[in-house]
Length: 385
Image (spheres, rainbow, N blue to C red):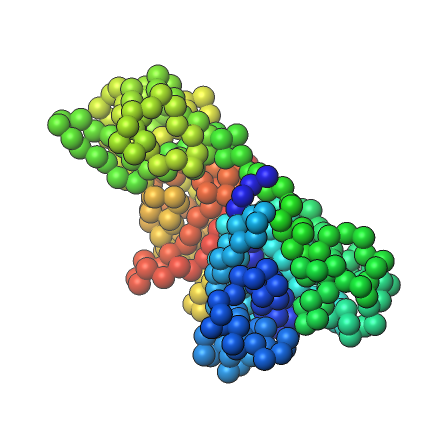
């Protein structure tokens, strides 16, 4: 079992997400003494997470906030994402690196359109585990029937674990509920501590996006972080763009030579041939190297107030490479507004070597950037036919 779990929380406004996060921090004793002084009653638990003044004044979460806490069994990095519809795009940021999403719903209202929207985003991002935390069970008489109806009302491509809770009273958050003895599953914390999230990056094809070139004593080494797989001295590799094949003659990790490196190590690689390798190139085993393309297909979530339109000139950032491009098509329609999700085809001015997002959440991801001011317009999940 992994010792670190990256998770994100999501849910509609007023469904109790901030109170749940506050309860997790409070009951796991992950709160500083000065923060505890803010908590006069359980209804104040949200103050532990809604840290910005604007958030406190409006009573909503408006930005992604990262919380770090630990129990004797596991360490956690929690991305607390906004619930309001206009901030749905922020969830993409919080969930993009998560292995699990806790999706909070109000037992009185059940699964809403915003609940489904958050589940759709988590599904697009290929988050493998989703906890459906049915909150405010105290306000529906701890009803097993209400819980069962809500638990069966959400479709998700990954694993779903439904847990009935009351964040306000703490029932089934960290401590099992005496009011819901019909629930035989884990509490939220028990599940977070025990869920298997052992993503084996070394099982993926090896990929080394070059971040920079090191020149010493007339020799060149190409440095970057292995995003997947295992790379060995003596292995035949292909450098994209260009498709030139050569052999790995040396690998350094923290300045020391090694025979083998594996993801996610940061390494420097030396090659047998003097090729034109620079930042943005991708080094991969010749047998599994992705082909280069100038037509990129992706499902994107649009993050910017300015619409994305067909024919627009943009920049595409893929790992360490940024190239000029034009939006060729958008479906459905011919534009995307803020928070919209759609299928986009872009034609790039230079080659990109990409993977399918389902195979790699790193080399299968991209950003669409405004060339005028460098603002991120859309986050994309690449599809390779």
